[in-house]
Length: 124
Image (cartoon, rainbow, N blue to C red; front, side, top):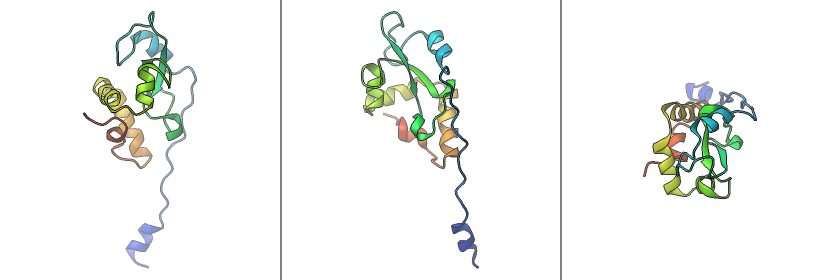
């Protein structure tokens, strides 16, 4: 058996299971108190928690994967980001904290998707 045959049959490692916590990000949402993109305060708009890596793509319910945005998944800044509007995603990338960027990068590598940050939130 050749080396190339051995490599071909090695299984792809599974990423760790997704962390589920419905209360995650609530403290961050209250502490920031405003939409990360447009800056509208919580008293003027409804804020929601946007998952940087979607739950369906293996994103965890942890503070580093959640960002407060106004609106819902269909309206406001949250809707703009969810519907892959390039300018909204590019602007959000510039506003991510180092911990948030590190989370997306690390989780992407765990899932065998290096460069996930650039795919989800490209530079403008």
